[in-house]
Length: 144
Length: 461
Image (tube, rainbow over all chains, first blue to last red; front, side, top):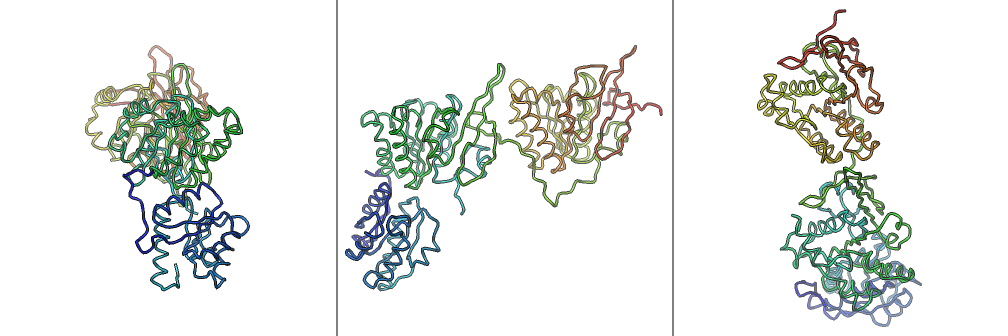
């Protein structure tokens, strides 16, 4: 349990309960992401590879898909392209969250946001929250 | 890719790391007992931790938490108000005894989630490893811990009494981004501490051994002195520097080149110290700040010599002359040269006397290291246009034909040889035996000590 002294970042009221699909193969990072995102007020689902993530994205229609680039079967950038080129899923926001310094490649792939690891809790929550807010204000057409 | 760096809070250590320890890395601080590992770790913690970026200091089974706290408080960096607000101590040993050391990664993850630290210290990590008898398990646990520490944004330090031999054997060194080794070298009379960056992923450091001392303020590092890079724009000054010694300066075209190093060698009592004092006295008269670094006479003794020649010591001090005394008994080569070098870099001195080189050499455990230091120092003098005079004591009073120490003489641009001439009245003599880039009078002349200093009495041609 977090120390009471900590001021932990939380989602704005409008974004609470939003579903986030996270694609991450490292169980420790998965655990940290789940812990921080759920504490902030989001709902989180996980997959560990790109192919399953694509299927789950079609099925669940999350508000945001957060993916590492280095995931098995279908890498995060290819996954992003697939999401953005599919009429059924192209409304899902994609955030690339990786150890690789690949912001340009993420933008080329159509990602809406990019963050580098290691995981900075405040940065993760505020980026996700801001991304959701931008979607709401843009009526569904978003640019990062 | 720009790498964020963490300031260590240890004077001199950031210079070794060329700006600090890379953030979000795992460092191993290794060394024998008593080398200062825990002091360094705590200094790092207190220098960096804030309420928004706290440090988590986990003690294990090497030293009880109480002892670490008691010892830590003897250093001025230990700010008790930070404990519990920015620096959080936890006794990991108790938890591991209950749940088993194989749960280390899980426990550390729980503590990270509870405290959200930006800095994690495990002291001692080696003590935990020793509980893992099976090599396979040791590797798995170390890997899992590294995975925890790398997943979350924190800079971590694993401290342990590891020896050099274990570097290639233990998995902790494979997962480390930084390995900092702390070493204690002893002879019968002296003990010196050094540190060395064994490994630094993705960054650059100053190679080699760097001396450090442990003071009430914590660890103070004296980075190894490197030969200066010579900028393409650098040009040696075409300017002469004189000593003010009657009869001496005109032996070398009105003085030596500015930025040159002159070695004055001679037996005890031959006048080396007085020549050195003349040199800085003349500088002070001309408004050139000087530094006299002596190892035999303290400031009071030097002041007495200065005033015995009718020179006003307080006026000289006002004109920028500093008399710096260091006892050769407790002296550390790196510390003294670091202090000297600092003044040179700050542009505080134009003339330097080192009296005598032999004292510096004796306080160095490593003869090669001493030569490298003096060479680097004289090169710094040259590029900073600081003119230096070093004295060197010879053991033979009369039969002096040259300087046997080739390395010392090679470091000098100019060499002045003093000796005694036997006879009914023992005479002091002076001869210039080498000047770089200048013609000189190479005859031997009498050197007299008067109540106004020394005078060179020219021999008849």
